[in-house]
Image (tube, rainbow, N blue to C red; front, side):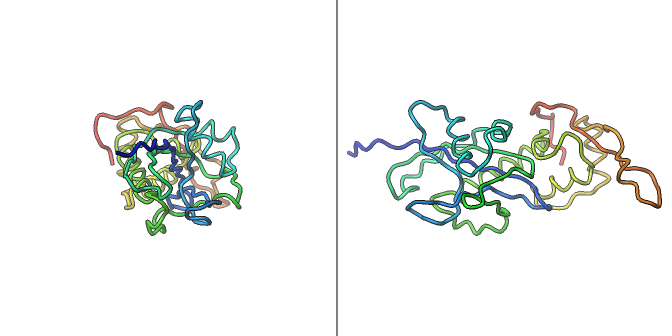
Amino acid sequence: MSLERPILAVDVVLLQVVEDQLQALLQIRREDPFRGAPALPGVALQADETLLNGARRALAKTGLAPSSIEQLFLEQLATFDALYRDPRGRTVSVAHLGLCQPGAALDPKAATWMPVRSLDQELPFDHGHILDTAVARLQGKLRYTNIAARLLPDTFRIEALQRVYEAILGRSLNRANFRTKLLKIGLIERAGVLTDAVGHRGGRPPHVYRFVSEELAPEERDFV
């Protein structure tokens, strides 16, 4: 019987949508094993910190500003406890899913954003499996909650919202049906017009929208 005490770790899948692509934040490992390889940000949990604070500390290692980290959407994703997931010894990870808007400053020597679809799942440890689980969770929540609000500014054009949905779901959506359905169920509402978008030829300015609720809330049924 082994008396080795397992290490409790925290790994974070932080996602954003940029240029119609779902991207994941990857940290460049500075130590063995897998030195120099991109991996999910992670830390071993300290005795005096919560899982949430551990997740925030992991993100701080990428160069994200503390003020930016405090504003992120973060939730526990799942526990990963495969026996040989870490070659250094028995390690159990409580992974977290995070979402952010584009533009957060990083330390380019410590971390980088990479399109999820370009990753070949050869990430260190079981990070490919963790990433797949996070994307599946986000896809599921996107179909019945307002979680897309965590990836967009307070007001947005309907085209920007649709691109977020399509980047996450990996498929195209009918524009007219998309807007009509989200307005009908009360997920979004018109917030004004974007007068700056009118060109020299004139025309009607496009509407901008916002989510009706700022809190993460489920709908009664899938809507996409």
